[in-house]
Length: 207
Image (cartoon, rainbow, N blue to C red; front, top):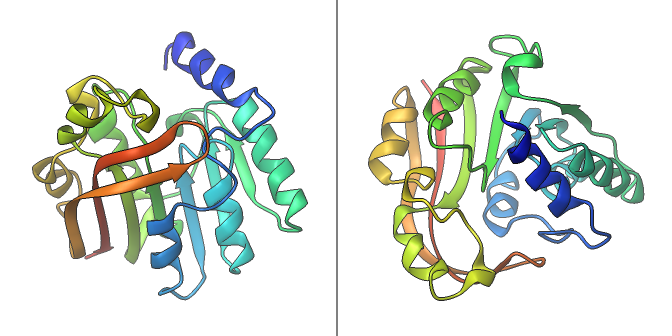
């Protein structure tokens, strides 16, 4: 991934305050409570709020991101909460994960560049065991109308980096969807997710 993409996230996460807060994403919190804690991977985990929450529930947590600033804050947050997380720095194809390594995957506002997002989803798919769960929430293509009038709600401003229901179904074609919806919600997550948003969220299980 190009350096300016890494630099963007290092700059965002370098501030003392947590960019998206220290509390878990509400949808993730609701869904994790329904599952038996096993091994889980957090992709593009940033400052660690969701990974730390899972660890507090007893999950065996692995996370990765390209931002060293995000990793540093995540490890500090884990220490503050008296839990441990395995946090790796780098792009997915450099991290030497094994096929069928994890029982669950969390993709929470994991917006990758449009040119690689589907390939990344497919690569992440191979890391999951049969029967593994995916918990997903991200901005939909209809979100553009919301961040165009309220920059504080966040999200990519190019439509190809956003998601549609059709794209999600295609990327996760070998999963049974337990729930899948596009929904208008109110976000209140730290400095950069505040206001009305259009999201796609789902829970699915690998066939």
